[in-house]
Image (cartoon, rainbow, N blue to C red):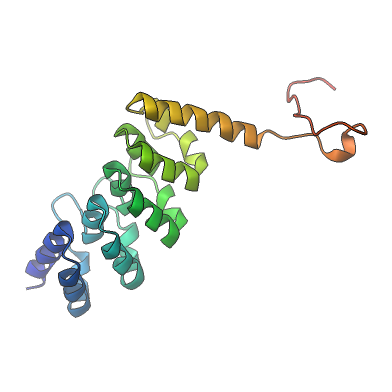
Length: 192
């Protein structure tokens, strides 16, 4: 009986039937452990399809579902990024910012998934929340910018890389400056 409820839960989550999802989860919480042949849970289905109210329910009543991994190590956030679900990514970031930073079995991040599928708006949400993800390499040594699909995605990552590096560039502390000088960038290679 629990197995059929598990399949019913997955079907309800896939189709966006929030009331049925709530009913099954509350009456038979063990059904939340149901997975399909690829390891997808109800939260994976909801994230992929952008069912934000359903994910809110899971986040409040079954938060462990948000970090469950499928057979490839993908979480709800990876599926949201892959499918370009910007509202879902924003919501997951608000629920727990670390959700966007989890790596898959091959070391890919949500930024990899969005970049590879050309999901510019999703990538913007991810990089705004966790800018360092644009520099993370997967096990093949690829960063999101290395696997980006589409000129707009590549251009965005290039612009963000420059912006991020400029913001991180150290400046001369005020005590070292001459009177009247503005804070100047330090030349890291200058011989003193």
